[in-house]
Length: 255
Image 1 (cartoon, rainbow, N blue to C red):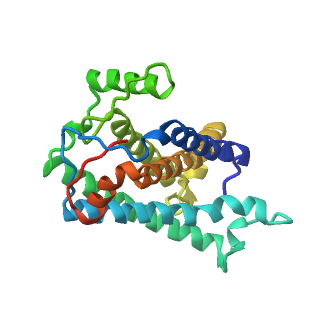
Image 2 (tube, rainbow, N blue to C red):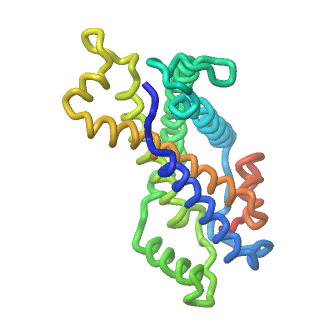
Image 3 (tube, helix red, strand yellow):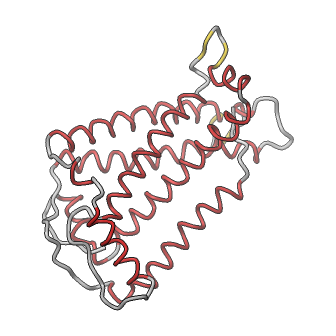
């Protein structure tokens, strides 16, 4: 079963993230080579670094393997009864979907290990809790970004409001992607019929418009967030964070 979501929605989300990056670099260009002294030193142990890059590569793989399932609806001309049999980059869309599912399960397992290690061994779960101080700091930084104030407030800790929201967004979107992905996975059957088909018969608009389209929209949002994550990591003022997540060396940062 392939997606039938209007491409304008997906392209609109991608364009939104792209515009956000352009606007940010235009507003913060003057700070490109500035430095700051956050209150916490930035460092990552070997397991954190390994899991971080493994998950990052896995997410890119999910995007690559998920595209054929979505694009099949536009590439098959004339339409065929089973678009999963369409050949994309030398392989059937059905096989692309199978790899996508297997890779998704692997990424979920890596995320669980990563989250468990951070929560129980490094005690970082409490550090991503959003506080009132984070909220007011975010307002102050947003006002400066919009040009309403002149005083720039660099992040003062390893996890500021925006970094915390980045993590929480990935957690929420990831949970939805897992749930919606399992539902649309035709390998899960009951009495020989895919579970999605059973639920679709009960409530077609919910399953088609919310679950299936929602899965694609959530995946696009994750893609956008990961893209912005890479964008901020590559900014010169964040080179110490990039060095820390690559080699483990401690450094200072500014977003």
